[in-house]
Image 1: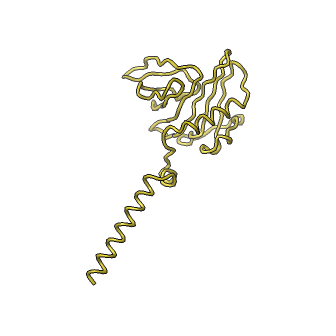
Image 2: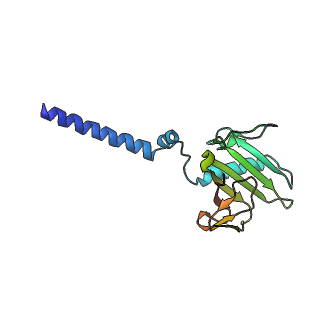
Image 3: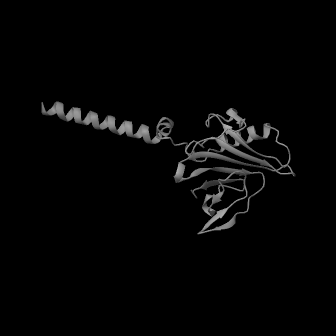
Length: 166
């Protein structure tokens, strides 16, 4: 009887470890936890490519929506009057094309309501952060998710961005 109980306990422990690993380290686990993950260059560059295909007019700034944040081809213009409730902003995209034809895009990946909104900003030309206060900086991008710190710079074209001022 003691051997059976020990074997059962070992099996349960092994199953718990495997389930925990699946929950923590797999795309399925990320989806179940509502985690979109970190910077995925290929995915986000595909979103920027979709924005370019929408033929914005020079000087135009627009808000777009990824109906499926995992699918760049689901990008569309917002319908007139379309809004999203607090906590439902993941998938929002803002884009601006300067008169010189330089594109800037912000992709919202997380909306934690009062705990802040998070995403990534792309710019054809390097962005120069300006002091904001308390060690924080702001970058000139479309939309309101524009707060950064130096460590949030990914490269000359990409930044992690947030807005937690609510």
